[in-house]
Amino acid sequence: MEIKQYIKDSIRTKQSIVDNDLIINQINTIADVIVDAYKAGNKVMTSGNGGSAGDAQHIAGELVSKFNFDRPPLAAIVLNTNSPLLTAISNDYGFEESFARQVRANGKAGDVFIAISTSGNSKNIIRAINDANDIGVITVGLVGQNPSQMDKICKYLIKIPSTDTPKIQESQIMIGHIICGLVEERMFL
Image (cartoon, rainbow, N blue to C red; front, side, top):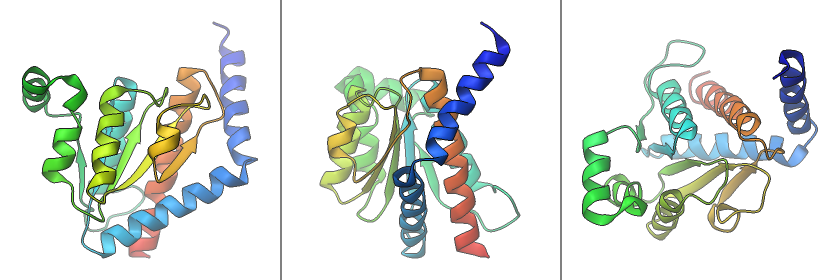
């Protein structure tokens, strides 16, 4: 791996995002949707697998704790962090139910579910999005540029203009940060 080339490739992906008005508008819209949910007394749920699980935790942490300034906490639940719960659901119902069952238990109409996946085809994420849609939870997807199952089922979708998993993940957390910053400002400034 050549260090400077890696950084240039990462910048190129982010420049593609800057130049894409659809993505910029989707980020703004998603932030507004989350603000509206919070103002209505709802919450955000997040989940992902692998590195996307870490990003889901990170985004929820920014909402519950703080992003740029001290303010009241915002309700956010991470569906991929409770290992006894995940293993119980996976053992009793199958891994595909690992997030969906939690969505059904904790979600209510008007909540927001942020599903993070580089491929957009993870079976447990797809099942959770479908169940969220069924109960009126607003679904947001962050995926890579390849066609995916999430393209068809998420109410709001941001497709990172890359097929390279690390570049997708770097951009997903950047967009997560931007959304958290916008939500914080729109809620408390």
